[in-house]
Length: 166
Image 1 (cartoon, one colour):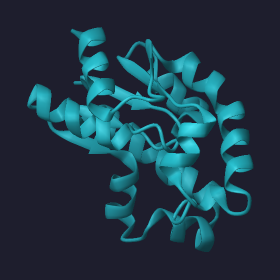
Image 2 (image 1 turned 60 degrees about the vertical axis):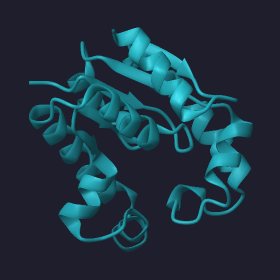
Image 3 (image 1 turned 180 degrees about the horizontal axis):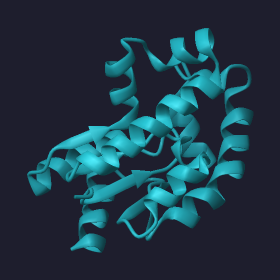
């Protein structure tokens, strides 16, 4: 069993929204590893970062992704930093992974002031740029397809994903 599609990309790319649209279109269940972590721990991700640190969160995230990849055959959206762990990248090999690429300007508009996003404390635009610069090559390396989201609605992005995956 493996997911029909795995969506990766930075915050603001629309992974959760597009996942929901794909689930509706394909009549498949949708799973989001960030939501899994919050459900399992009973804590918001921002609280986990503040109270337990990013390393602890990344451990929880790696476990949540491994479980979802083993158990879920629908549409799966991963948290923005999930691909940072080598073991997660190994698990994604050969799967239908789609990178939802978003540029700096659109990401900033979509994320807003970063409320509830612990990695964006401080200068939001500068932090998003740094994250995009650091993570884009990793997203590209694990993905079978890339879909640009800039200037497009979630419906348009979902339609392209459906076209690419048949």
